[in-house]
Image (cartoon, rainbow, N blue to C red; front, side):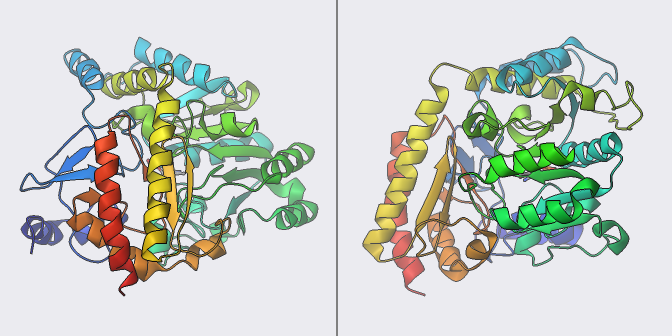
Length: 429
Ligand code: PMP
C-alpha cells in the first residue's frame, strides 16, 4: 500500500485498466503505478508529495525539464489570446520554420496533434504519392497505433504480448511487411522480390521501443539506396529521436536524407503536437494542394505551438546537446560500473539525451531477438528497487530512457548510488 494505491483503485473503476495509455499501468513490472501530482525540473511528485528523479520525461517531450519557466511563460501568454482558433495563425508558420531550420530534409510540413497521426498520415501520403499499397516496417519498431502500423510493433504492444492487435483486419495487415531490424540481407531480398510494390519503408532510425538499438554500419545506407532504386519512399519516424538524440534528430547524426520525417514528443514540449514533412513534391500531394486527405480540428493549436516553439528555442542554444550528452554519458557509464561491481551483466546505448540499458551479457544489443532475450525479471527487480529509492524509470525493459537539461550532477550521483543497491536486488532473484 502506498499513496498511489487508493487513486489507482478508484481509477480502475472508471478508466480501462485505470490508465489512458497501456504502459502506464505497470503491467510488465507489476505493482501500482505512481500517480503524479506535479512535476518540476528533473522531478515528479507523488500524491503524498514524495519526490522522484524522472528519467521518462513524459516519454520524451520534456527535454528542458518539467515546467520550464520560459515554456510556461510562453504558454501563459498564448492562453490569454485564446485556446483554439480552427483558423491559421502565425505561430504555426514560426514552428514550421524552426523545424525546417533544424531538419533541412524537411522542405514542407503539416502539423498535427500526435505521433500516431504523423505516421498514419505519412503512410497514407506515401501510398497516395506512389500509387502502391505495401509498406515495410521492422520488428520491434513502434510507430503509433494506427491499423497499418500495429503489426509486430514494439513498446506497449510488445510488453502486453500483442504485437498484432485484435481488431486489425488481416486484409489490411497483409499490406504491412515486417523484417528483422539491422538485417541487410533480408532487406535486399524483399526489395528484389517486391520492390516495385513497396510504397514506403518506415523505421525508427535509432529505436526506442524495443529498448534503444542503433543501426549497424552500412544498414541505413543500403536502405536509402534500395528505396531510391525502387521508387520507394524512406520514412524516418523521428517521433522519439527528433530534437532528442541531436538538435537535427537521428538523420543529422547518420547523414541520411529521408524522403519524409515524422515528429512528435519534443516538438510540442509537453503539449499535443505531431508533424510530418519532407520532400516538397511529395508533400504537394496532401490536401488542400493535392488529393491525399488529412485534417485536424486542433492541428496547429496556438497554445501547443507556443510550448513547441519555446522548447525548440531552448534546445537550439549553443552547447545544449554537448551538455546533455555529457550527463547521459555519466549516467550510462555509471550504470555499467555499478552493474559490473554487483556482478550483473549489463550493456548500454546512448545518444544525446536518450539512453538504453539491457540486462544482457552481449557486448552490444543490435537486434529485436537479442532485446527479447534480456533478463526481464532482473530488470523488474531493478526497476522496483530504484522506484523505492526515488528514481522513476520506464516501467518496461523494452523502453528507452530520457534525460533533461534540468538533471543535475547531484541527481546523477543520487541515481547511481541507488543503482548500486538496485543491481544487488536485481541479482538476488
Ligand atoms: N513513433 C514512435 C517512434 C514513438 O515512440 C511513438 C510513441 N512512443 C509514436 C510514434 C506514437 O506517438 P504518440 O504516442 O504521440 O501517438
